[in-house]
Image (tube, rainbow, N blue to C red; front, side, top):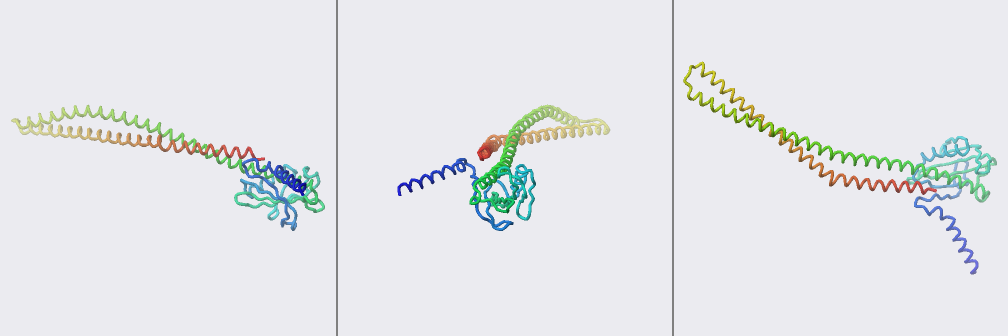
Length: 304
């Protein structure tokens, strides 16, 4: 009884070690099952495997390419099966074989059932031919690796695209800071120019105001002819108009200064938000995306 227990334990340990390669990596394990399923030729023995990170439609296309490379023969779709007739598979002894493959989607993965029959229409199974069954399993598993890698490669491509977009967005935010700083400098130069113009206009305004007062005093004490008075009155109107124009120019310059100052405040707020909010957030997004890319790269490299 003790010997039987020891023998059973050894078998159990052997089973664990034989399965270990499929569980050692972090990715989904590619384990093959063998069972009888209904297919175009009735209920037959086949080999099943679930392919992560891929779809049935995509896996069908990959199967065509994979089998073309393996046999130099073309796969045709007949109803819901991918069929390869009288193909020579060196890995299965070099005999002409018919291969039937059915794909379906299974929760974001592709489920494959593959069936192999010889010229005698007998389907390969472990019960009938262990050696050919092992070769068929290896072929199916090699395809699953190929399809799994293709799916992960596509996802890695998408993740890298996201990463590049985030890098562009970060550069754009940094460029926005530079643009806002240049805009502030431009506004400050315009403010200085307007202030210089106001100084000149103030001097002009003071002079014109003085001239208006003089002209009014002249008219108050005027003793000349009516024609001469009209000339002096006209001159007063011209001076008053000139003074109003100068005042309007000063007001316009001040409004422009106010506008420039508002633009400066707006740009300063934008810089503050970019520096203290948007850029740190984008850098964190970038960090997480780089980690996502690294995980996908590790996953791809560990598919075996």
